[in-house]
Amino acid sequence: MIRVRLPDHLCTLAGADREVVIAVDGKPTLKAVLDALEMRFPALKGALRDPFTAQRRPFVRFFACGEDLSHKSNDLALPMAVINGNEPFLVIAAIAGG
Amino acid sequence: MVGVRLLAGTRKGAFILSSNEGRQRWDVAGPFFPGWEIYHVNGSPVNPDRLYASQSSGWFGQHLQRSDDGGQTWKPVGNEFVYDGIPGTHQWFDGTRRPWEFKRVWHLEPSLTDMDEVYAGVEDAALFKSTDGGLTWRELSGLRVSDTGPQWQPGAGGMCLHTIMLDPNNQGQILVAISAAGVFRSNDHGSSWKPINRGLVSNYIPDPTAEVGHCVHKLAMHKSRPEVLFMQKHWDVMRSDDSGDSWYEISGNLPTDFGFAIDVHAHEPDTVYVIPIKSDAEHFVDGKLQVFRSRSGGNEWESLNKGLPQQNCYVNILRDAMAVDSLDSCGIYFGTSGGQVYASRDSGDSWEAIVHDLPPVLSVEVQTLA
Image 1 (cartoon, rainbow over the protein chains, first blue to last red):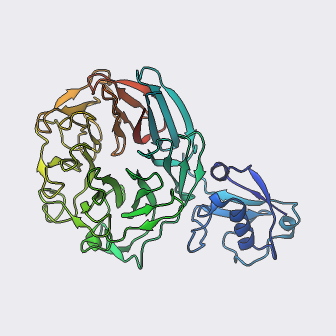
Image 2 (cartoon, each protein chain N blue to C red; image 1 turned 135 degrees about the vertical axis):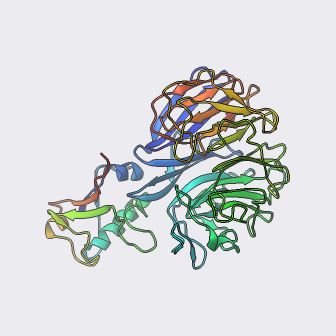
Image 3 (tube, rainbow over the protein chains, first blue to last red; image 1 turned 30 degrees about the vertical axis):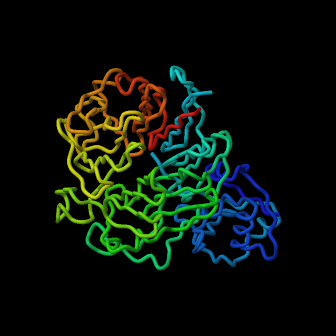
């Protein structure tokens, strides 16, 4: 089970808690986690990735274990600490405002 | 219960303001979708409890929400807006070509006859239709791929299709307005379209009387007389008496004819409202907030300012932020960039603020509930 932490906007969109736990079938890659997240919360489809190209939205980033995974291959397995549930997979919205 | 329900879209969420026929006291519900830009919320004329809301964010894209209980609860519906075929390109500010790229939904117009049918006007300019309550969307691409499509270009706010008007007497007739392209009409349910901009004069484009390129800000009509159209353009207030085939200016004695919003009284087809602002750069007039009303279908305008701030007021009213109810004493409503929603229970003779401190108001729609 993967722990995924969402930014506030996506909690309201999905009607989800700040942290959700999702099951991932097969190899727990970045793509597999995002697919599972959208499957569990269909309202998130199109919010993290373009619904057609599957490209990450420019102002969304993915972090885990202190590392920015945003530019890693979608097929790369997530860190073991995320896979075993010790660390969350973080969906981060770019900070803006002021 | 007879009453009214205002649907306000704001920069940071949606609000629903409700009152009975007296319109003296208002209940304010919301924010719905807090933190999200809500460009537009609109209700079905067939079933007023069916609402649609356009929810977007620069971070997380476009989403659509639907309510079947008058806004008490909402559920996400379809947000896949795919241009038909190869999108092609349109004109950009600097003369280069840009590919059509979906950005957001500006306006939602539910069908007059079927609550599951709804039209969406989007940026980059195109018209989409859903026949399943917003779950799926299909482009009515005859508009965008018409002869003039490649000539369209954005206004400062983006190349948006912001106005959709359905003719109550002729189900096949649809009018849309696009900034900065102009007005287009279909007489075959949206299959084919033609530009209807004859009579518009826009001195800010190379050919001021060009077939397209006019920055039309908003259209309005009275449902009893849909062939008569009123327009607030980037400059000029205009009128057509022939469903848009030709236009003539009715700015008359307005202090300035720049503005965004325009609407028509619910029971007086020749009573028109605009909220002029000084220019495209100065979105106010001398620190005073004034609605102007014509009871003669244009040209002769009177200032309505009783109850509106008359000093130190520099708010703006956007194109979709004015609406009218259809109670016996017609109510007029508008929302401002300062977060106020003003209401008049007497056709504009006097005004008061229902709320003062919402986020900047992007749109206001009114439902008159029987």
